[in-house]
Image 1 (cartoon, one colour):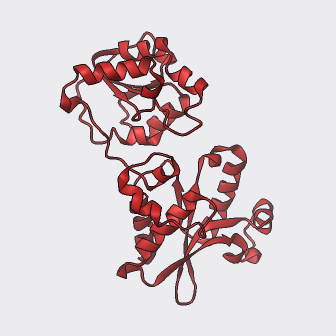
Image 2 (spheres, rainbow, N blue to C red; image 1 turned 120 degrees about the vertical axis):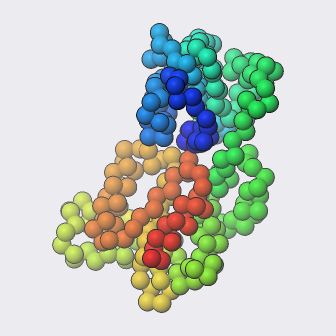
Image 3 (cartoon, rainbow, N blue to C red; image 1 turned 30 degrees about the vertical axis):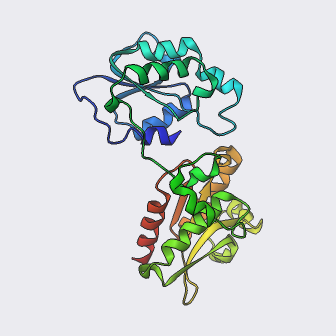
Length: 284
């Protein structure tokens, strides 16, 4: 859950204190290694037993996706022994990072902890994260500020809502004066972008292209139709080993062709900013 980690950015930490980050899953701990400061001790609840820090951050990870709300996942994270370990590791300060209404509806141990914090904490100690992503539209509940974007999505752009979102944002950005020389097309076959006879492609890369591998979005100059860059939208399935291998093949092919690539994960925020920075780089 990258969003929970991003919500900690800009938070004041006492530099003199020892700090720990606890999560129920190894994958979240590994992600925290790439986001949080190096002086944070980062570990799962199980591995944190017997250790203490002045400040502890406990991230519950689960969100409102259907997979997160499966009873076995809720039961794993809402285990009273794990919650007790996380809370008791803090000597002076404990911070809970969790999604709105993710656990309250289950009326379990984390819900009780949330009620306790809300009752005893000062107003300034409860922080609603301002981090919002256009990809929040992939879920049934999202911030009202995204309603206008949602109403403008076009199913003709793609059968995937994530790609509909990116297509809509791309049109908005490319309508600005700075980018009027550019356009984009979607689902362009790789063998339409590169010359297979280049000679430096591996056998696996050639086979990959001949099997109609495609790019989600390709940005071109309107005049001459020169390709400038590629944008890929990576959903959860991109974590599978098969898809990861395909992604690496595509990365390698585009690198050999000198075509810049932007990968947008559906767990990312500030999608507009990432698209704008990428297009700005293409325009020189």
